[in-house]
Structures are given as C-alpha cells and as structure tokens.
Image (cartoon, rainbow, N blue to C red; front, side):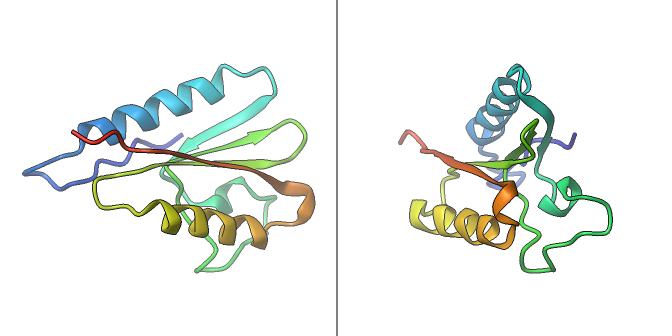
Length: 114
C-alpha cells in the first residue's frame, strides 16, 4: 500500500530515491514470511486496531513491512539531503516505541553520489 515518496521537489526530483524505495518494497513483498508491505505511510497503520504510537511515533519510513512473526521492519532510502545518522536515529526511535514483540529490523539504503 502507498506510493514511493518523491524527494527533491518538482523542479529537481530525486528519481533514484523513489526507484530504490519501490525496489525495496518489491524485495520485501517477494519474501514468504512477509504479510504486508507499505510505502511512505505511518507505522500506526501496521499496529493492531486501536493502537497508536502517538503523533511523534507515527513515522513514515520509505518502506515498512510486517512479517508473520508479528514484527514491523523499516527501510529508509537516503535522499540527497538525508544524513545517515539521523535516518538511523529516527528508525531506532520508532522501533523503541513498539512493543518488544513487534520490534523488527531497520535498514538504510545509502545514496550513491552522482
């Protein structure tokens, strides 16, 4: 569910960012242990009905997927302006707000310089 985020604005879109996000979503969807994949949508959508991480916890990773073991995994694709440390910290913060039983992996796809 969802769409790949287009970064960089209309005048200078970062096509590589949305392409890599789609690629990661497809890779996750092909896994036999994955139940659900979403792109650029809040983590709250993956929680049991009535549960919320709160406004600051409802981050929108580029790709998130829910595996059959109940874990939520996050993938961020570095855009031109993203700092790797900030992306990792943001995902770790979101992960820490999930119940331990739902804490999955986090992954950052680094941008290859032009």
